[in-house]
Image (cartoon, rainbow, N blue to C red; front, side, top):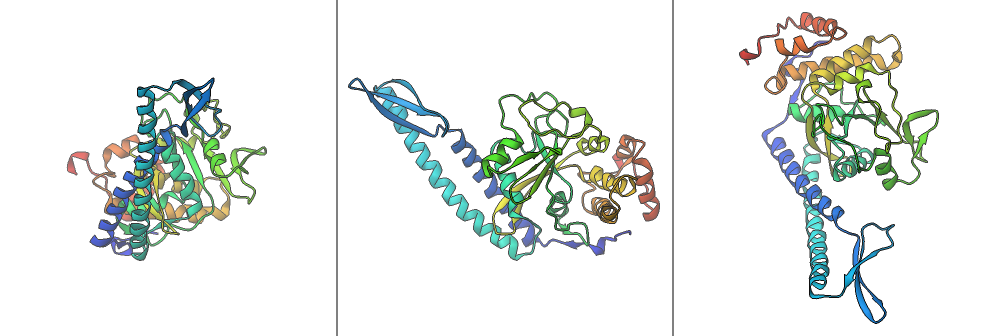
Length: 350
């Protein structure tokens, strides 16, 4: 189905202002949380043989280690730790309240939201510095980001789902740190899940999937070019999904969205042009579950139409884009162009 521009419901100027304010507050909040997370869990004085020694616990599992006998320098270090921790706690508390207020305004305007279970995972990944560097959100959850980037509500495509799919992007051009990144000394996706819910386990029958005691599933997908993943990541994504390569192309999008319960979280998603064609290709994939194909088709068409109407400056459907398409996707783009009488232009025309 071809969607006309009037089929989309464009966001008001007030909606865009509220969204921008939420994004600004979230950026300040996550910065404060990262600073707090980077601090030692505690500094404390320990008495031994009649003398006080300053000890540091880097993590809650750490037994603590001495850094030296009490001195003016160590007393200053201890006091700075106490003051900094208190200041960050106060700042985070204030920003939490501001996020709640601004997310409430966002929700009242009926802007697209994301379930809180996914949001909790995404916030933690962002605090750990993994979202956008190691991982991106794919599947239906990404459509919330596409609606926000387009500043328009889609007539279809952004449908509720309990699926939560992530894609590995570290070491690719889709990563915020680019090709040169080396994944060492970092937490894994699985470690983040376990820190939020200790019941998560890797599904032995599907090692690309983690499941908790309630049956909630998180899947990690990876393009063949990203294999093997770092040894510290217990997930074992399938190596045969060539279509995952397409989601690493182009220019990914980053947005901040409110949650159903009035919180906020970030989304980092693939380039909308490549996601749309990926969906149209899935709709024709012989091995694809037939029940999923109509949804794939709807999502692919509405996203490509939205890109044409609202994202042409940042993500043009021009000749350069056409020339970058692999052979597998060219027929789907050509069919879309033909059905809309759309002719890609040279990039200089934009």
